[in-house]
Length: 109
Image (cartoon, rainbow, N blue to C red; front, side, top):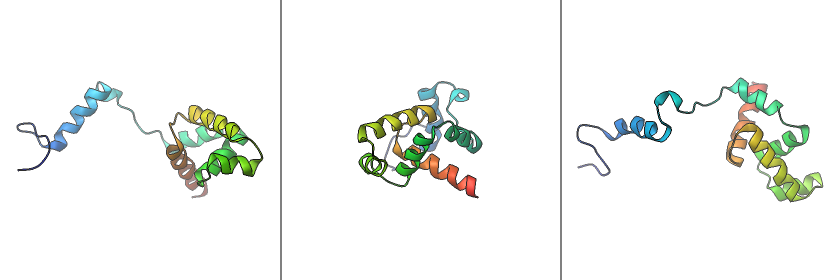
């Protein structure tokens, strides 16, 4: 017997679409990943300072390290990052790293 939840007549993998529909409503309203050209446009919406900070964060620098490098307060770096997250409709540093790296590869490749 397999571990985990199982509904009579359904494999566990068959339950995922139902779970997604329950979480997001109808399947047509489920979120879709944005296209890469839209991502480039999004990065273009950043100010030069926001883009500079985003690229430094994508390279792995902490807010404090970015602040020291730029000669600004780490609170100012945090403010810029919050604005970047809002403009790009993302929630954190990992998503920012992925976005910057993806756009960088597309621009150079």
